[in-house]
Length: 301
Image (cartoon, rainbow, N blue to C red):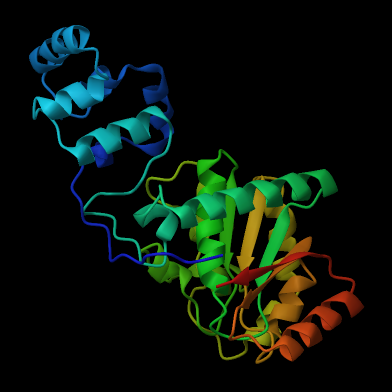
């Protein structure tokens, strides 16, 4: 899997932030011109003019508006995203990290590859009755957090009710990727906070919730080894179609093994020309010895 082109924070302007996620689905029943008017990007009289020109020229409505310079390419993309239920966060108030390639380059080859992977994973997970997927790797720098974040986006956009948990209590990244506060997060949840205190809806993504890592504890392994994590995951299975857990590198810390014992299956990430095969083999053997199901290995190039 190739990561493709990276991009900085998304800053392109849009009016989509006027609409809450729970009503966005209503746009799928509207014509494109109606959506553009509702977004404030097109006046009703301009819509009527575009419809008249469209019928004469035999063009698509959106392309007619663009040729008449009524809207920009960005405006059209946002309206189409709303119409097809794909809310891409392109507003100044929402800034996601460059790691989220499925958002910054949603029509690229990499995004298509992740979507195909998410579909295959869900097909297997559902067939096998497995709803909780740990995304793990033997070593740091294998792209584990990157894969987990982009997988979560694709699953949510495909209509699956998705929860992403940043269970890396040593070097967490998901709060940076999604542009939210690290606190309170998983570490506080494991110490008595309620799920309502820590689970957050990711802006502009229907069906997508996130639990960040929270304050970094002095004893991550002890905290993850308690029964609270298993209880949390079991409760989450009643609310979500799929739960993804991002984990620390297994070769350095025992955390990943503890997390793996609480999930239904594990996707092992390796990076081409970087990950040492011996480390990955050792990790896989430990998982197997502990009865952990491995759904597959992903080579990240």
